[in-house]
Length: 394
Ligand SMILES: Cc1ncc(COP(=O)(O)O)c(C=O)c1O
Image: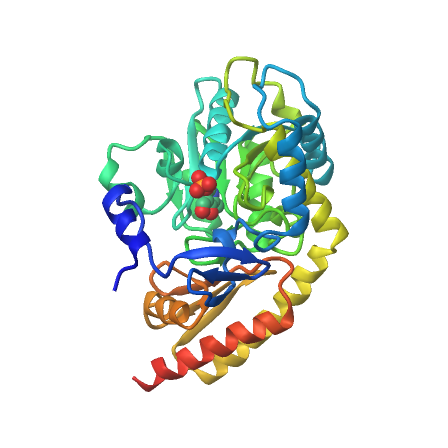
């Protein structure tokens, strides 16, 4: 039976989401509670956004302190919070200049516009990957290499060439005089946790250098510690020309960043791009606190440790259930590919008080908060094992 809130959604909200579950009313760390007081273990908090878990005390404090001081200013005025965050991002990544927006897709749009400038009108084709996901705005959707997202909206933006991840020859074969950029996720998230191989990325990066093609990494999902390094590209011994961040950057407040290598940053000039809300004092102050918290709570170390633990436990499950096809991922970004559909397992887990994610028809995605602990992982996997036993019996 549908709850009252679900009925209101159905009546008044545009029908863009398949909404499920009870009415959630509060969260703390890796847990959520519904209106009846039932507790849920959330191993996919905020779709990869809530990297510090729900309602982390330091984030609550940063939000309330900044809300009392200054919430919004337009980007033609100077304020410290945004300047400090741009500096923090550049210092923790590569020599760069940063543009702030509000969502992942908007970050991708910014990177695409920069590529157009870099191509100076004669180069404008961008190579992206099959199975990728870059967002729902028009160019980001067109960049996304999955028919299911753009088929109803054709004609799409026409300059994207899609190739398979980890297929160097296919990518090289698509390069022509008009190619201006390669855009990819180092780990495809929505596409089912597909990890780019190190040798492949190194070859692509070198090819881009040689051909003066921009190498752009979409770190909307992989950024901010998810893989055990602050940014996923740092696992690959390369430096991108542009990096897009969002999700964990604000740990719950809406923010994204287009991080542009200094070598090309100055091709964009005043008036060419903007965002009314982007990088407000409020969101940038909160994001600064996210950086501090990751450092001071040693969350990269925890991500590596818990990632190894989670993966080891998942391999134990794989040895017990023949319908588990593969375990993939890095750090706390893990996918379990099944030989059966994953959506019913997501539903069963939710009914038992566990939140994971089902993507790409047969992949369960687990992306816990970076401060998750062993006992939380154990509790989650105990529930999954019970469900797997039922599935195995059928
Ligand atoms: C890799 C990647 N890029 C872009 C996006 C789009 O982000 P948003 O939904 O904030 O626009 C997502 C969202 O899941 C993503 O995973």
